Image 1: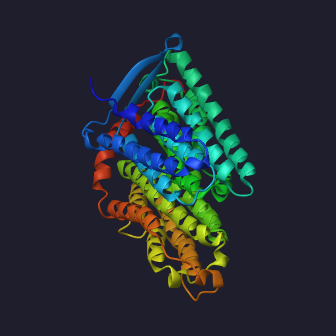
Image 2 (image 1 turned 180 degrees about the horizontal axis):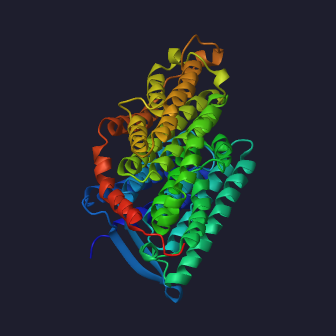
Image 3 (image 1 turned 90 degrees about the vertical axis):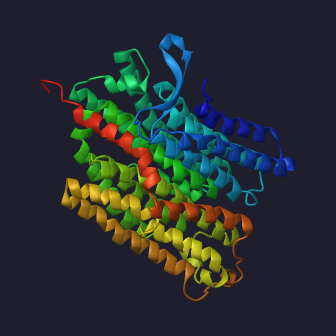
Length: 495
């Protein structure tokens, strides 16, 4: 019997998190930190065989595991991954390791609970990317909300209760419609297996209802305009680690949901509503970028920037060609590295000065040259500088959009101007110029731990920017298979 890689990827971090939780009070904080580090390293290592042993010529599900869970309702513990899920699982385990290192000395109260929350959340999010049973997916999808709710609610800022409730209500309400869709599909197939749903043929009006049920769950999570308002509040109140996981992984869960559920289960509806989805994506790309331009809080600026960049992802998916879809997936991974790094940079400054306001800084390069070099690299990647990962995804999506419609590509390309505008505006005011604040004059440059964390993300950002082929090779067969499925679907007669 083959070693169950996916079960290990899910349960190793969860069990490690429970062990960290068992260390109890802050008297054992050092033990909790080292256990969390060991758990996050182990969690990352067990996911590596997914990359090395994956058959890149096969677009179907691999590493499958299946066990009966609730026989009365034909519900299974069924796991499997394709070329889209594997990079996202590796991003999750890598980001968890980064977050544990980033919170090492920063978190002083309830250390065990903080570290455990991220480890357990990591396992649950990998479960979302691996589940091939609708109810199993739904359980992981809802369960991962709880650790994030606690992270923001306990270690967050002064308005954390408002932010957590808004985050929870938005995501929960969207998810309930997804559950209704699963129940309807079960009624028609007597199965919760996702593959069975792919084979189900439904009239267009039914597909549209199913698509919108999934849309509500996934659009909130991405978040798409106009259901995006919870994200800036959650980011501003979340501790640095919470912001990193929220931006790097949680937003990707919504985009993944479109590829795994909404589009292949309701392919006619996906094509029928493509213009609607493209319009929402373009509004996010342009309008939210303009909103980012006027932000005074660094975290809010990066949060709005995330919404704008995720608009590129959904745009790439709904132009229905390989360049656009692969570009959207590359943009997901790139955004995970870059936005996570930008939030860590804000965290470095906040730990020293306890302010996120752009106006409170200026001339940081004079006292923190190493940090500024890395921060400017990530800012340039966020603006889509060639040679960084931020360029590759956007470029592929724009090329794909150009194949579909010149004006869609033209509007999408304006983000290269607006993105450069808000990014350079922040960089200029925070990092360059004269030191305008006596507290800035006393800042200390990066310590070894901070340099390691940001250095790892810098390497990842540059590697993906210079050599994206390993990622596109991983996704190519799966993307082709999905596009073939979408193209072959015929509208039922009489609709």
